[in-house]
Length: 421
Image (cartoon, rainbow, N blue to C red):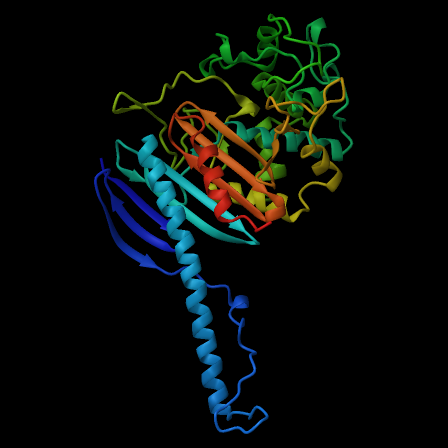
């Protein structure tokens, strides 16, 4: 099967099969003019001078200056081309190794887009290529928007993360009485998630009341703040809290307060009944053959229902990296490890090196601070990984059922752009 690949970082257009690859077009990337003046101020001695350096003519100085620029340009082009080729080669090799139909990747570094890659197919049946406008499911990256919505409401004085959820939700079981909003945000509520339950499928079209009633039939797994356990159900409840407090439906709130201000025009809900232009199809690869993903989907709501493009997510990350979207106090809550009742940071990994804030995983990778989240839905794998101290973020979107693919690929790309420690 041939996969069409296009990338820009250096821009290129490639067609390759699993047996061969043919390089068709390669163009240099845009240059950063601020780096062109390096090595232009060196002192020169001329063969006709005796003792002190002679002052060359204006014509000679111009020729030397031009030569310095050309040399600098060549150095920059070679360095960037080598890195672009390395990223391209890595993504293509991983796509082949893991049978991934299509990938969109965007790397932002030091205030500019350093690399984009759009390769493979968004739809195998139509041989539709992945492009900048291809829309993928982003799964649990959606949790970032749920957490941001809660923090925006907190900044408006409409709620506090330390409020009990019973203040905003009705008909709850007694076992939920001591659960606070911060417990939902940090996966420490003890509520049993719906992932392994029947009755929460998208086709059920549950109302808020029906959702709470069905979920409350199941006992809690532990007392609030006692342990950490990933819980989609908790983030679905956060979406209902946003609706109840704001008086708007959840998608309308996101559009008004996040998507429209940040020009994230392609973000929507994944409901299959909606017509979403340029939506990628999700796939499962099994026994040497691709299959369409299972469309009997769970209703993930605010825990994982958003679809987006790489460029829309880049607008989101740029707003977070540059500041101004949320108050610094809110970002501190967002990106600071949550704690259990005994005072320990929530232990996502056994050794405690990986923790969780409000909708974000937090860890250090080879000495580099990493704030990010992956997303897994049927037929899709996504990653949004920020390295704030390196002024770097990496977005990977794909239409594969291999859940960890995007996060692992982003982790392989990151060292190519890390600052030297």
